[in-house]
Length: 462
Image (cartoon, rainbow, N blue to C red):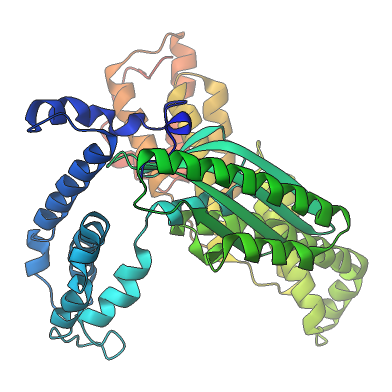
């Protein structure tokens, strides 16, 4: 919905759909105002998704709960969503009829049941509009420093104002923003509020302007909302100053009503990113605690191991956490802390600690990949080659298999490059480079000897 022109026209938040303007100007039967352009683009988007729902993968599946079919249903669901926005009451019953037709398609999976349930559980819940985008922006703004205008997938958000308050462990965010669709050009001002009580305990509310208003009415409504928002902000500041969190909650309930969102309302990728941010201090605290326990009792644990006596599970747990986290940090360090890696591996063997192969293997493979990328950027530099060989030799000490295919691919690309280009070094230095490069290949478990290498000592240069 398009509201207050004084707000909408400032900045360039309405620019994303501007690329459609020449098309509409050329093909519209008459000049369109802003609201009519949004309607036209929504109709075109409806038609596009109506075509997409006939994508061929929708006809080749072994169960309606498969990813191909769910995607097809999602295309159709987008048509239903847009139809409700464009036609309003005229589209009443469209979704219900769609769901009933889908119920005739039974799934072989008892949990999935049928197409109707799949739509309601997977597609309907994943649908996004301007309000959901505003909620996503509000919640993620607690953990992300957004610029004044930012892009969120197919949407744009321009911050009009925002204030962050804190009372004890509770953080309060109160703001207003313009949220727009990059596809349809729809643009709407919203107000939002967030309460973060710590960890994953977060709640947000969004308030949109009433729909169906004329431009003049929308402008008046926007002015009233600005005044109401300013009054709310004043009251929240006062409550925060008193550390009266229940009062803040009551203020939000009165202003925003039942529009409540949680961290589960975030887009999937962003939800994982923010949960990782939330987990980091918790994991760091646990890691520090376990490390302190292990450091104080490492000698006792070692004595019990040498004496062949049972080791308390609590001490083994602390040792495992400390050793595995220490190994991960040592592997990720640049340069790799070789001495630390070998020391911790010896301790793990001594006290019988199980290594976290999944975490350490990934850290090791990524560290080797970074070393190879650095070599690829400067293939003729012996220093970069020596660093890569050093990393490979450290990783060889790990008592489990590491997936090195990415590093191996880069080695082979450098090998192919070396066959076509000449080193800008003396022959003796070129021979040294080639010898070290072959050593690196063997450390990466590449059958270097079966490769056809040129005999004149050529290699790459910067």
